[in-house]
Amino acid sequence: MKYQVTPSIRLDEDSITFDFIRSSAPGGQNVNKVSSAVELRFASLGAQLPEMVRQRLIRLAGRRMAQDGTLVLKAQRFRSQERNRADALERLFALIRQAAIAPIPRRPTRPTLGSKQRRLTAKRVNKIIKNNRGPVDDPDA
Image (cartoon, rainbow, N blue to C red; front, side):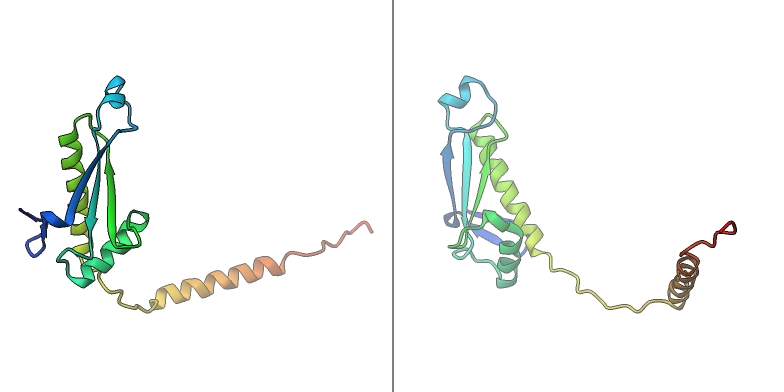
């Protein structure tokens, strides 16, 4: 089975594995009995991702990305295993969609004439204020 993440990115089911663990979230006795939390592991190096998307995904994932290129997401918001599994998949897809968007390069700009004049005027005012500081002449002395 293949997951359609974006119109151009499809993920194989083989690159995603699920481990079911006991949740640390609230849920009463259900937490102690049922392994409802999901730990999703996505092998980014084995997946067919464009190289630029993979690099941005590594940067976005931060500490969730292991040294071997495996992205680990833990989902435990819900009480049921199936809803946590769907939540983990949706979070993975959202992260990949965010990584698929290329950043807009910054275009350097120059300050306007008005901003230069305002800066110089403010500097003159500050100079006057600071020059007026200092010892005060005492007329009684």
